[in-house]
Image (cartoon, rainbow over all chains, first blue to last red; front, side, top):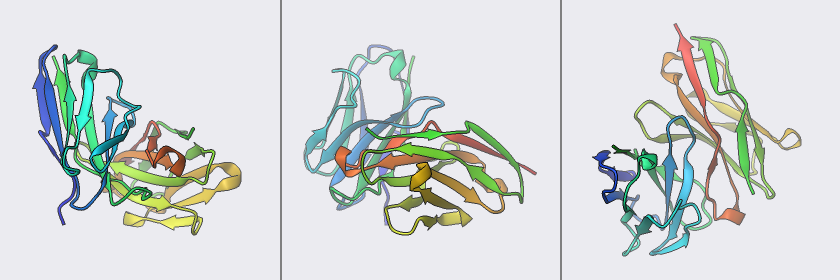
Length: 114
Length: 114
């Protein structure tokens, strides 16, 4: 079946611009996670959704970052007033249900802020 | 809080020789432990998972890992390296207390010499 998909695969933007990154989880998966992977590092947790609600957004670095999942399926990560330090690969993962710890990752979106 | 330490940032092996990637973990609860692999410009792929069943876990592509509670370790091994094993490997821990958010190690880069 289809895995987790993320669009775009690459995004280049200028400092100060607004960007949106999209994640399509595996059909039927209720839990959705966003991670950020900076160059040479392991992924770091950003935010977790259970259904439509953000159950834990403790990993978002500041209020320029926001994410939504209005219908409990597709999620969008939004970054306002981008900074060069936001450049990273943004990964999305989904899992079948709360309490299930195997997460399936998408290919990521590589964001470059010039 | 949970965390992992990958003891080697880079491992180089000859094709056909054994591979050992070392990982120590910290968790206040019974952890789930994972190894993920990331090939260049590819998404994260689950190699194997430990969730308190058998302590020796077999994964895909001939990899296996052994959970040792007394040593808080979860080392990854493969008897005979193949050129296609060249990639970045991440040791990962999660537990129920953090809604199964994954905590990644810094990664180990594996190179395979012909």
